[in-house]
View 1 (cartoon, rainbow, N blue to C red):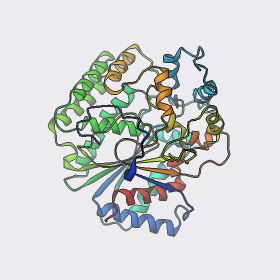
View 2: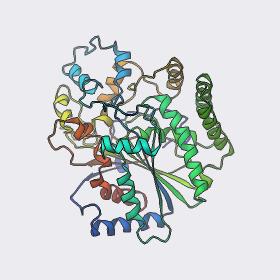
View 3: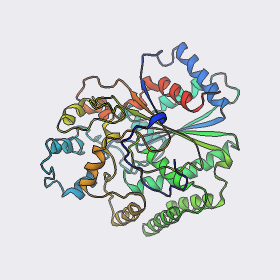
Length: 423
C-alpha cells in the first residue's frame, strides 16, 4: 500500500499476491438467530470491542435501476453498439449479458432512481425490492448489532448507510466527501479518540468510495486532492446545489484541520469491490477484501478469475465462476451522467484517477482476470452461490452472496480472524 498514492489507479497485476491472499469456503453453520449462532456472534463481538472497535458502518448502494456493469460508457467508447467484437468469438454475447436492457435484471415498475437518498423510506423500499441481494438490509444490520452486543459492557454502534449509487467517477467522489462528513459526525457523537477504531463494511462500488476517501485522508500535501475538491466545488456551484456546496466545504475544512476522526483508526472491509482506484494507507488502520471466487483455471493460477471467450458467456448466467460484476466492472466501465455539467466534471476527474480509456483498454483490463486489489489483505471465498439458477435476480451474476443474512456469521468470523485475531 503506497503512502502518497495521490489517486493513482490500481495496477492489474497477475502475479501471485503471496501472503496477502488466503482462500476460504462457506460451510454450513448455525442458523441465524439460533442460540449457537448468537453465542458465536457475541464471542466475535467481544473480540472486536476488545480491539477498540466502537462503531460499525455498513455501506452499500443498489443496482436496481442502474447500469450494473457500466456498459453505457463501454458502448460510448466502443462505437455505440455498432459492433466492436473485433473478430473475438463470444464477445458480442458477453456484452449483451452486461447491458442493462438485456442482462435480465429488470427495473422495478416504480420507485426512486439514482441518486438515491440515505433515508429510511428509500432503505425500506430497497429491502422490499431486493431483499438481501447486494443489499445490507435493516434485518442484517439489526441482527449483527443485537448479536455482537449481547451482554456487552461497551456496545458497538451499528449503522447502515446507502450511498447515491451513481456509478461513475463523479458520483463516487461526491459520496467520498459526504462519507467523510458522516464519519466526522459519528466520531464526535461517540467521542472517539486515539485507540478507538471505526469499522466500515462496504459492498461493491461502495468499496471504491472508500478507496477515494483513503486518498482524500492522506497525510501531507496532495495535488490530486486539491484538484479533485476544486472540480467538485465548481460542479456544485455550476448546478446551484447549495447543500452540496456546504457538504464539500465541510469536508475541505475537516481535511485542512487535520484531526480527522479525532485520531481514531478507520478499518475497511470490502465485498466484491471491482479493481479500480488505488488506496492510500496513511490514515487507514486495517484493510481487507473479500471476493466471491471459484478457482477454474487450468494453468495453476487459482488467484485469477477465468476469462475465456466464448465459455464465459455460458458460465456467467449461473454465476459459475464467482462474482462477474467484480471481474468485469473494471476501468473504463461506468454509467453515463445525465447533464453536461456532470459529464465535464467526470472528464476532469477521469484525468486524475484513471489512466485507461477506450474499449480495447477495457478488454485488456478484464482479460487480466485480477481478483485481488494491490493494497490490503484478500480473501477469495467460494460462497457456494452457484445453484444452477439462470435467473440473474437470484445471484446478480455472483455479486449478491456477500450480503445474504445466512452469510453474516461467516463474514464476521473472517473479519475478526483477519483484523483482530489477538483479542
